[in-house]
Structures are given as structure tokens and as C-alpha cells.
Image (cartoon, rainbow, N blue to C red; front, side, top):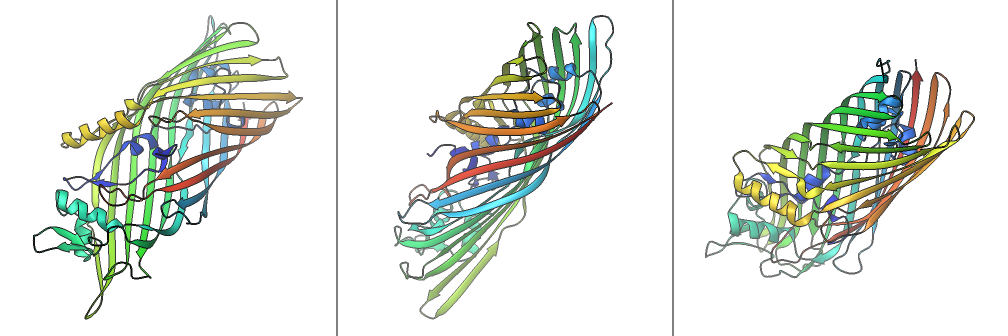
Length: 483
């Protein structure tokens, strides 16, 4: 496996119950967060948990809301750009192909109402708003020649579990597989298992994960701060995959070309709690800690497939075609606990330094399928086998010059894939201006990773792999008002 294969290993397998079986990549997609928020938060490396005074910390350490002495409203506009270079590695001399996707989003909208708490409580604040936690938008395209065919997958499935409604059954109805004299399912590739043919695929992914949060925070004598937040995340994910094969050199008798298309739409919502603390050791030094309960998701999927298969016999050319019914599946997902700790230093009115570390054991992801206990046990074993615990380190700094601010941050994310101990970096930059009743900030964040995925999975036929170099860039602009 290549590093971070979990991000793109999204092959959808068919079980005997004819549903799209989830895999550890699905669990990771909905539990692997890269918090967005205000431009100040992003420009400072998303490392504001020990310092707070920004709405975005409601999603990391809600205790930081208690530093706010005035009520505040903020709203952010964002642009997410994904660039992916993809190469079909099987075959040796296939060229890389570039594809890109750009999408506007809403990283943050939030309101904090500040009030006196009475007695030793300096402030008692309430917050409500939305932060974006993950972005799924991506375009992938590859093309090249290699051995084997997706038809061999359908042949294996048919002989193993029979004809389902979405893969093997569709291939059979499109004439891509058929029965021999012994009632085994075969294909034009049965006698040409290692034949080299041309192939390409376009994958379009869209959607994201945003969290509606409600928070309360208190400041006790400017020394001890506490906060609690109720999070209600909403996810939406769409994936369209268009796969093509052709045989211009007639390496496979009868076969000419095929297309296989998959469409998947996923929606869901969940609930979680976050509890955070900040302790001011003295004027300059603050220590923080937070714990996030698992998120309990209820998720719905709808999906369908279609296929066309062109072939030539002695008596002419034929075109087979078939489409699946519309499938639906509902399930629950319980994500892992999250633990964070941090330290921050404030240099009077000159700026700050901040850092935090987050620990998540991704094997704690658990699927719950009502009525499919065997499938549930199998996928949860797959999660334990393929995922691991991981830490995320975020650091940030701000320099203040009168009303102007300059910010920067660096982050390191350990891969949650078992056996991959690599760290992947994030770079953030930002700037802003702060007035008594108004502020405006801009931020840029850059992330890169090398990934790999399999277009389809087979047990005996040649297995394909596609390597990708992925670059994600986020531009965020925030305006806010204090009152």
C-alpha cells in the first residue's frame, strides 16, 4: 500500500445482501477532520485552542470562548482548490494526468454573546454557529495501458456469490459475462487473463462536513476557563465514477470496449459533546486540554450503476447495455474519542505563539448495520486491521503591529493507516486588521500528500493501482463585528 491510501481507497464491494458494503475508507472519511473556521484561526495554523478568543475554537476547545469580553459576529467565505496528478502505475510507461477542482464554501459563521457571570465569574458566554471540518471536492483522471480487466472482477463475484443487482448482475445483463457448458460464469477475458488493453477513468467527488455547534464557556477570575459545546455535524458526499476499457490492438478475441459507471450520494447527521479547559499559569503562559466524545452518525446512501459492452462475433458487432435499480442503505457510524492538549504564550500586545497536539485512535470507528450483523462484524474487523492511532501537531504564531496582524502556522499529521508512520505537513499564512468594533482577516492554507487507490478489486486477476500527487489549497476571508 502507498501512503495515505485510505483517502482514495473507496472501491465499493458487493456483499451477498446486494448492498454497497462500507469499508475502512468510508469510516476514515467521516472521522478525519481538518478544521476550518475563521481566517484568523486558519492563518494561525488552527492552533488557537490554548488562547481562544475566536469562535472557531468551539470545534476544538470551547473553553477559549470565555476569553471574549465583547459579543462578536463573524462570517467567512472560502475557496477550496484541489489539484491531483494521477498515474496508472501498472504498465510501466503510462503518463501522468493533471485534473483540478475549485469550489466556494462557507468555512465559518458564528455568534458569541458575552456577559458577566457574577461573583468570581468574569464572563459567561454563549456561542452558536457553523464551522467546516472537512472538504471532499476532488477531480481525478488517469489513462494508460495495463493487464487485466474489470470484467474479471465481475466474473469472480458471479462465481463466488452469484448475480447481484449492481455489479455482476449488471455485467451479465450487458453480455460482459455469460455461462459456459458447466454453468460457470466466464468472460471474453477468461482465456486472455493477462492481455494488455487500454483504460481510463474519471472520478468526481464533491461535498463536505460542517458542524453546527452550541457552546457555553465561563472565565473564573481570569485564571481558569471552562467550556462545553454540543456539536451537530452534517455530511454530504457525492461520487461519480466513469470507467472505460478498449482493445484497439485486438489482444482479446471478441472484446471491443466497455464502460462502467457508478453514482453514489451520501447524507448524514450526528451528535457529539466537547469539553475543554484552559489554565492561565501567569500573564503570558496558558495551558489547555479538551476531550471530544465520539460522534454518533445516522447515514443514508443511494447508489446505482450502469454498463455497456461492445463485442464482435463472426456474424457481426453487438452492443450490450444494462442498468441497476436505485439502491438505498441506511446505517450508523460511531467515530473515535479525540483528546487534545496545548500550550500558548502571549507577549503583551506584540503577538503570541501557540501549539497543540491531538490524539485519535481511528480503530475506534464502529459501523452499526441493523439486520446485517455478519457484514457489520466484517467491516469492523477491517477497521481494526487497517487503521491505527495517530497524532496531529498544530503550531501557530501572530505578530501584532498597531492594528495589523501577520500570522503563520505549520502542522504535521501522522497517517492513521496501519504500518504507515509518515507525517504529512500543512503550511498556513494569514494577515488581518483589528479595529475596536470591526475586524477583517485573510488566510491561505496549503496541504499536500501522495496517495494511491485501486480502481477495482480482484482476487486472482491482475490488480491495478493508481498513484496520485494531491495538493489542496484553501483561501479564506473573514469579516467580523464586535458589539
